[in-house]
Amino acid sequence: MADHFYGYLGRDAEMSNILNAQEGRIHRLRETFVQWFHEMFTGMDAWGKDYADRRWRIGLVHVQIGIGPQHVVPAMAIVVHEVGKRLQADGKDQALKEALSRICMIDLAFIEQAYVEVSSAAVLRETGWTEGLFRRLIATGASSM
Ligand code: HEM
Image 1 (cartoon, rainbow, N blue to C red):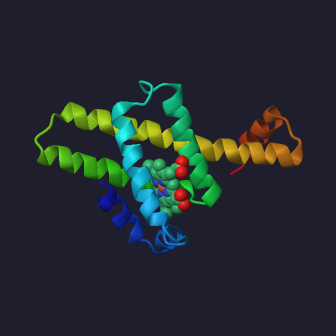
Image 2 (cartoon, protein in one colour; image 1 turned 45 degrees about the vertical axis):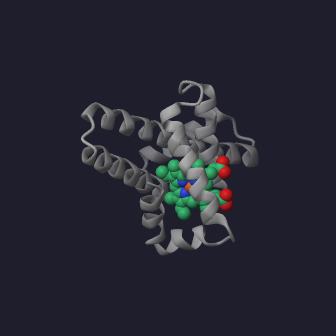
């Protein structure tokens, strides 16, 4: 799975630059990716708070590096696709494929949540606006588009 994942990222010039921007980064990433993949099966604390916190923190790392959701979403689609292919080749039950796709989507939601929370917190900190005002401004902005 890690080979497919980093093979996919490596074919995009922008992502390949990020992956190779630091000595040893790609090696480190393979290890953290394998651990991430493994944790989907173990659920850490039965897919509880520790699991959710860990997933959110993974999102935070990507926000800090400047990797946008537009890159993370297709990358997760690759994981779901490759998992599906592998399960089919191994003759596994469809229910297993559905369960894995679901947990991938839940992981993706936590990673995405980090983007939203970090961006909102930064705006609130810089402007001193309340959360209510910020939400209203977004709703007003969205309805005028
Ligand atoms: C399904 C989507 C993705 C998953 C599950 C994933 C998983 C992870 C994990 C588990 C970490 C380690 C976080 C930590 O240190 O706590 C990480 C870090 C990182 N990821 Fe991702 N990632 C995804 C998408 C991407 C994409 C699209 C890129 C684009 C190049 C990327 C590049 C990186 C980089 C550069 C780091 C930091 C590596 C370092 O210097 O330690 N990731 N990712």
